[in-house]
Amino acid sequence: MIPSDHFVRFYNEVFKYLDAHGGLEDYFLAISAQQEFHCLEAFRTHGLQGVHDYYVRIRREENCELDLVMEPGCLQLIMTRCPSLGKAIDNDAGVSPRYCDHCPGWVLPVYTKAGLYIIYDLMGHDQPQCHSWILDDIELARQKLREVEQARPAARLLRNF
Image (cartoon, rainbow, N blue to C red; front, side, top):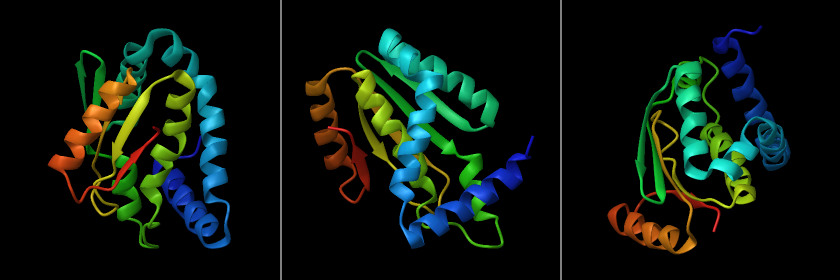
């Protein structure tokens, strides 16, 4: 098994190469298709609780500082320390300017297929943090988007609706 330090560095260089030569979006979609095997059915069947359970496991496996806040109709994922980006930043070859894009690159299509709506705030590629809201109702998602846009006017928000 490849150590995570090496894996993150490899991933980072793949992102740089594909970004420079084309194909990064297709790569993210390929990752998304693979992730469907791990989580799509749970997300479809159990909705936000299935997403919550998945990220409880990811938090432990990836040793990230991730707060999960479940509210009626909405699950917030608040990443306060992403170990993956932290390792990429510490990489002497330099971090890919699109490193963080791999997370929304795979989750947005999966949530769409599961009938869930996401608002994703990357918060900047130079800090290992992000914040997302996953909702199970389109009207709640639109309302949350308006709230987030008003509270964070400079935010780089991604969404699947």
